[in-house]
Amino acid sequence: MTMTTEDREVAAEQPTARQRRAARIAEAAGGGLGLIILKVVLLGLILALAVYAALVLFRTGQWVAAALVLAVALLAVWVYMGRGRLPAKYLMPGLIFLFLFQVFAALYTGYVAFTNYGTGHNSTKDSAVNALMLSAQERVPDSAAYDLTIVEQLGDFSFLVTDPDGEVSIGGAERPLEEVDGAEMRGGKAVALDGYNTLQFGDIVANQEKIAEIAVPLSDDPNDGALRTPDGSKAYVYVSKLVYDEAAGTMTDTSTGKVYSDVGTGAFTAEDGTELKPGWQIMVGFDNFVRAFSEQSIRGPFFSVLAWTFAFALLSVLTCFALGLFLAIVFNDPRMKSKKYYRVIMILPYAFPGFLSALVWAGMMNQEFGFLNVVLFGGADIPWLTNEWLAKFSIILVNLWLGFPYMFLICTGALQSIPDDVQEAARVDGANAWQVFRSIKLPLLLVAVAPLLISSFAFNFNNFSLIYMLTGGGPRDASAGVNVGATDILITMVYKVAFVGSSADYGLASAFSIIIFILVATISVIAFRRTKALEDLN
Image (cartoon, rainbow, N blue to C red; front, top):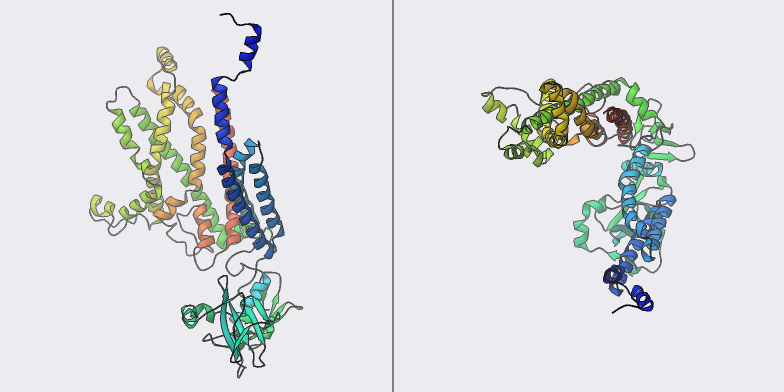
């Protein structure tokens, strides 16, 4: 039966089976009422969290951050509630996480590098003043006793006090006393207040230490003193022996008469150079970078660690690449039997987590009861991890054990991708095996693996887990002005400066981090340019 022109036009307008199936999939992806409700609920939760975070940031004076959080939340609502905008729906989560965990972290590290942030300098000046005065408080002799009720709101404890004149006030550790009305009275004592939960005797006993540390300022002037309680039922006036003069910017010790002034170093400092701690955080410009290169107690260890870092990264790449390439050539030979079983054995070290392998090797290299000394060397007393040079050799050895399987895998793949006819042509021209390897295999291999060698160098430049798990950076350099050892690389030194020991210097550690970033970025750029030249040459 022959179709007329009209029939053909009608048939063309009818959707095909594929089009109908695509329409059903699109409709399902668009979701029904249930999916829309779920989307609204999730976006509502995100918006509620954003509003809460913005309020917290706003209370701490971080207006720009609060506005940014709200803007991102509103943008998310606009993207996901509207039709279309499909690329933005996929890109937005990744961009947010990229900013939070990469861009923000890098920017904040750069900011900290220009401050004195660290132990004793981790807050504002007002907080430092309060902390200093609280630490020097003494109870006023024969001071009046205030009737006290401990109350709680949202996890924070407050003092509901009734002074000797019968006036009721409430205050917290960071909130001076303020008079309140409507408190429930019992026997002339305020025992409850709307919006607060009154702690019973058992609750007070359970939180005794925390309550005993609370000092509620009597007023906005820290010199007026604060209320503290030894038992949770009575509060007494405590006054600091330090007197703060906000106009002059001084702190005076009334017991000795010594005057400490704000000289711009982030701490109250006396004429003899002694400081009151804690201090506060200030911008110091390039002082941390200057310290890294000018102070002998820091400069000497820093350059020593820098040299060892380069040596460790370079030796790690060369040794792992050499052994991996050698094994790849051996097991790529067609005359080798049972190659797949040997290859499985070769990659076993790569299958175990690196930090666990480092811990196992640390136990095996123990000087007193390690496997190497006791079994292999017949009870010898070899200080594998406590002698400076042996510890460095041990690190290279363990890193070779951990790293050669990776190089073995990539070299095997690269060798198998080299065309056989090129090698056959070289052999026909009279080249021996070494000439074929040096002139054909190695250049073609380097084109494929050079970017991986560069990334391996960058990884070993910051190979924190191996150094820290195996030697802890030791043996310790007692003459250094920073916490550093003979086997520390830059990243472990940064970690120790920032987090290990009684004194943490986040500003100096951040400055070291910026230096590491510049070094690795410079080396990577140069190396990738050389790789490009090698690729063009081939």
